[in-house]
Length: 230
Length: 193
Image (cartoon, rainbow over all chains, first blue to last red; front, top):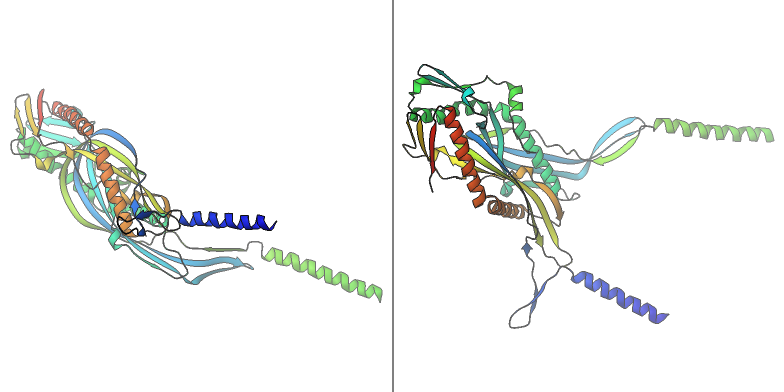
């Protein structure tokens, strides 16, 4: 019986030893037989899914916007006791984070359905009626160098999932603000800057060319003209 | 005497029962929770620059890239995996056309267009990134390295000869169609090589 316990103890030590050594690469150095632990980063999981789409979009305006996403993460004890509500801020439970985001917004006009119906000719005058401009967030970048966070002693650091959730909320807030940025108006004005030189090269004089849009857009129209991938 | 004692006991039991039901009714909607608000604070969106551009996009390649990094440790390995989203836009930049790029005569038009290429090297929507797995503690520099890795991989997988060729073919079709709509019957298009 006593031997059995000794064997059991030895087996337990071996298992613990194996578990402790897991994840450590031991390399022998070339000459002196010294051993050292190597800590490194490797990429192991490249995966790709792609979608290819044909289109004919003329991008006419580019806006670079900046937003600092902030979050004040205060740990609170909320509840109700004997029908009395309470909301207490717990000491040493504060966390704060500021994430700067730079985004690029581009306005474009879809020419894939452009046809003779979009052109009106009266004498030597030509009017091009363009489809509605649309806006896309073409890129966004987190300024990782300038991310700042404060974490109280009793709290854990912000996780990647939490930070990503704040970044996604920041992205949504940028998209929400697009109609107030004036990018639709700029896109309409810039469309003429691209198309008029093309038409003058075709033989028209500038005064003979009119670039027109279907209508003036209000805030509700602008929201429907946002093309955002989720 | 016995009946008096019995009455007191009954009274006490009744009191306890009443107190129990009273306390139960008072604490019916009671709750206790420990937590924090997940919403971000409202901050302004600032415009840094406005630029007039003239980029014709003829092919878009939307990519998802799962990128991860592993840090070997003494007891266990730390791992960070994130899914990045990006769209490579292939086409021509009209600001790169040379003088005399369009020549029209009668019902014929000749267009000499710039080379088809990547319109913008900023194509990753990093704020849309999805966290996939995290163990251990990671610094902003590690996330920046992952972003660069995803950028490189997307270029490698999206900016291929096949995609550039498909973009050029579509550009020919679309511009020919546009010129036909403008009244030209014979359209000749060349791209810079």
